[in-house]
Image (tube, rainbow, N blue to C red; front, side, top):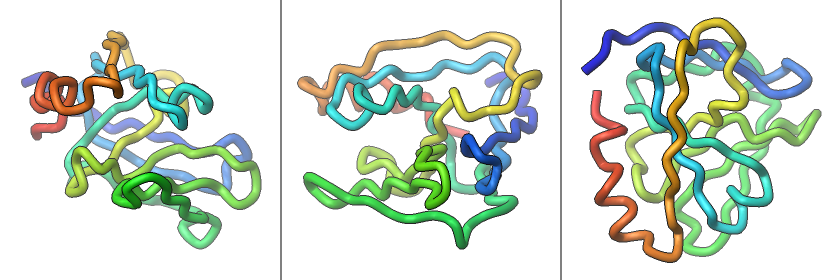
Length: 131
């Protein structure tokens, strides 16, 4: 596995901030489920120990739908969802790569995730969330 670096990021207004440890060259997922497709979320899945809130935790609101297992967090001020706890990996965090600050990502590879084939797609990407 590649060496991990620190990436910082946040919501649009900057009230919510976070730090995540991941390689400088990342692979992200482009999911076609309704919420990801509509919100333009690009998934960078990391283990819980590689994610840390740095500001604005009190400015988050939570949304759940469908199975209710995924915990989607939105900034109360600007409405952006910079991260969430995915139902496919409830012990990790899923960061929107589009919410990462410029400069720490040197390469981003985008892979498609077909929500219509959730079980097979989840199995195919299981290695991405390993430390």
